[in-house]
Image (cartoon, rainbow, N blue to C red; front, side, top):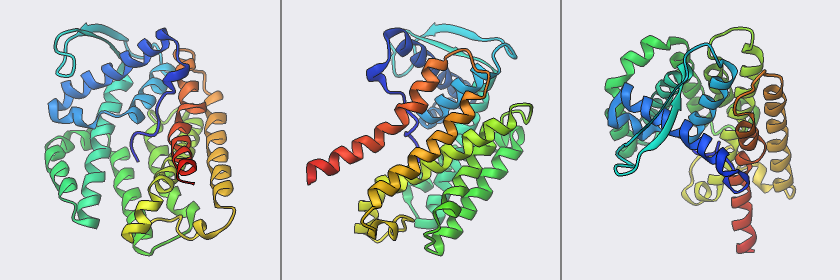
Length: 278
């Protein structure tokens, strides 16, 4: 469920690309500072979006830092970076999400990759859980609820996707303040979308392997594709409505690019592949 909240770079100006890249590199830099090189393996576009959102919404609450440094990925030429208070929050969340997800994969499927990643990140979790107990508890509970639905082979899309929606709502609710309602709504609907898009993307593979997928039953309906498009459009429309009610000023062009265009890219690629097969 990682890697879907991406920008549509084909419609970004060079300035917008630079702004996005500096935020991405800023998040990477803070992950490295807090959690070392192993932590940087958890860098994702999804948490970059949350960082952009929270830094814009809470602009001025903490000093914005900028700079230019070399890094392991760019050892010869420096890269511009920027960060603020919410960046450290997103750095911690990225590590925690990957840790709990890896733990879940090991417990459910005895995935050796999951077990290795869990062991790799385990040493960082005590500090993260101490800093963000509410969010970490929400991750553990939501993933446990999701595992229970999967064990039941549930096809209740609202209930199953709602687990990840609840998780994301808790993560988006950064400070439990005036903006809680809209942030939680944005996170919840985006989380449901991400879970269902992941299931949609993996459906053929899961059918071949006999793995759990909540869309197996819906797939049998002749209007399956139309139904999925309608579900995706509704969830993203609700997420966008909540976003537009937030008083974000900085980087709103990037945030709208991601919410209105970028999040559709994987869906469009999947459909393009299906059309080629036909």
